[in-house]
Length: 325
Image 1 (cartoon, helix red, strand yellow):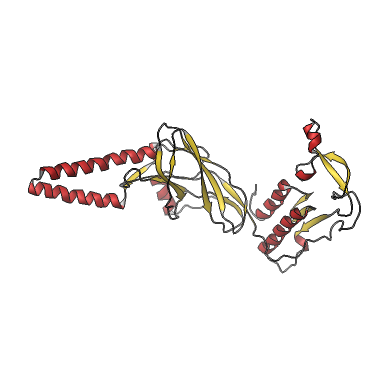
Image 2 (cartoon, rainbow, N blue to C red):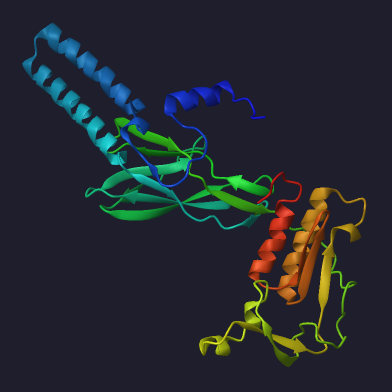
């Protein structure tokens, strides 16, 4: 059953035409751009009203000329502020995975298909303080803007709603638009700070011999698997046009370990278990050993390499989440 929307969300959806995250690209048409005077613009408007009343009262021709000249300039700035945003394109970029507690960095791509500059732009998450820095878009160019968001829980983090604003050219008028491209960042569990050493109880220990993927003596080639470490790929054979193969070694340092949820102390809660397993995944990858992961209801076979590390950490990040993908 779909959760009920709050009155504020309903009002924003009706007033600003903003709904759920939308696929890229997002085009800023005239119905998505809103224009209002800034506080400086309101103060100028009040001043112009006083000047107009004074000119009428004292029949000042120069007063009328000055009042309407400034008012005309302010009116033209509405057009320029609106033209700064109209027909801009917004696309979702990349968002690398981070550990809980680190800042998630979303890449948002702005496309300027027009043959004119877009000046004085600001982009930030709606509800956060607006940045002091502005940026410009040159004609017919694309620019990547980094959006930083704090992480408070593991799992998928959706890019929040964004505000794109310009007060160009005089700061009298604020033109802005709201949008939320479909872009997610995977947040791994936080790494346990003081975790015990890796559990080598399940598999060959240092000093055991055997063909277990060690790193001492070359033993042969086998078919390449996605989880294999790039360091063990037979690159020379690949360069000659041969199929992808992985080198196998045998020696004293052969080790395979299982990072098992059920071997952790029963007193540990879920998040602490996940933090310890995440730390062990990082340490096992750094040590260059083959490692597998066992969680309640799922497991991942032993392996090495960045894809294998990401797959294990993703399992930990989405553990207990409904319909994790």
